[in-house]
Image 1 (cartoon, rainbow, N blue to C red):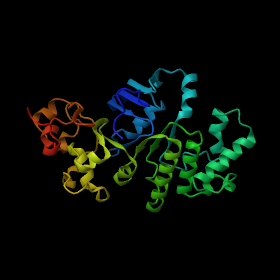
Image 2 (image 1 turned 180 degrees about the vertical axis):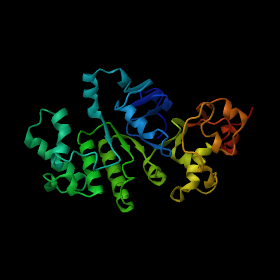
Image 3 (image 1 turned 45 degrees about the horizontal axis):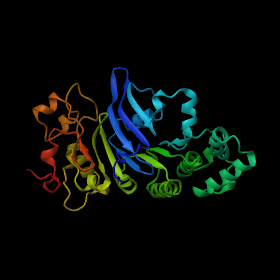
Image 4 (image 1 turned 120 degrees about the vertical axis):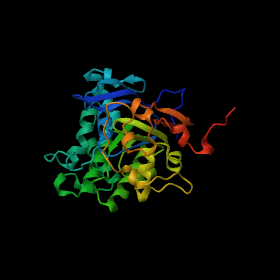
Length: 331
């Protein structure tokens, strides 16, 4: 799936979003669209702003500038009553499955809580039936509803968290590193579960992960962040076949499970060594780690520009790095 049809209002539209923590800029001028039913993968090293972006979209943290448009309505301008009403369509699955569940509530109570809040017309029996069905849907026996989170494994707790998030059939599900704390054998099960639930409910997903193989399996498009900015956004196939930003190339080259297709541009894994993702006083934040850096990279921040259909890159040398077959013909 490509970017949203220009003639249609995107499901989610983030515009020039900024988040400051004191004098530190955690997110700067982030903008993208997400269409109904689409999965947008969000990748970047620790500290790049991925989780901060997820929480800013849901108004779990305060933003400094910009807009988060949900079906054309800016969530940042909604009052508390309207925001609460819209939250039934906006759900999140957190990284730590056990910490995200209330230890004093049974599994059944946790999964039923969204129904008590957003579907008060349901009686206890109807809620119980919905909870039992959802527990079965995520691969748990319905007779587990009276047990507590500490009685379950990490993978089971994540299934419970997914059941709680999906019981309202939200239109957008944000997954913040949902498989990073799980065993490899369990990660695939959770990913396939998310795909099945997404297909059944038609839910759009913003999927945050360090695991590029998982992101490649799930996503229609992929957004790469570095030091709080978007440095590249493209369709899944285009990004893995021909990554254009030096940081994206380094990410793909450094992870054996995310080897690009034959003929794709590769970069040495050593590129990712050095200072971790952080904004600099001026210019491109990646320039100190980039083998292609020029004086202009220290003088100005490169804009996020389209270099091919649906493919945008923030790099002063993006057109030079563009493979010949993707370049527009010269007049």
